[in-house]
Amino acid sequence: MDDVEDKKWPEAVERYFIDILLEEDAKGNMPQGQFKTGTWTAIVNEFNKRASKSYTKAQLTQKYQRLKQRHRTFSQLIARTGMGWDPISNMVTASEEAWAAAFVISSLTYSKKNLLQLAICIVYDCKLK
Picture 1 (cartoon, rainbow, N blue to C red):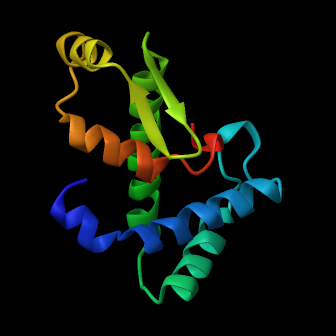
Picture 2: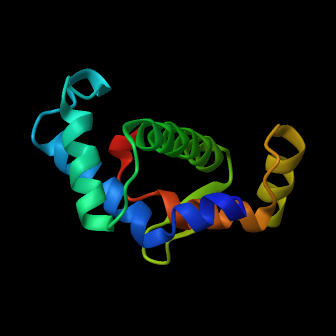
């Protein structure tokens, strides 16, 4: 994440958002991977209440799209040969050779440090594919 993203979306605020998304999914408000009509209004209201923010639907839907992209990137990373995820330590596991191969083959512009931060920060639940 960049500095602007970090300031607007500190970890606790991002977690509120993800929790609300998961709650709406658990209520059945996300069939076929799309939120039902009106669900975004409920998400916006609940998020702003919990986070003491005044974000708009557009801001939250954009954040949702960024989270989905980060999850896809993370999933692609750990799907590589030699890469894995340790749920106990919340860390990507890989040999130096696997990291080197990921950087050579991948078109990602992330550094190893950013990939580790990405892995730690975004995987709360696999339903955000």
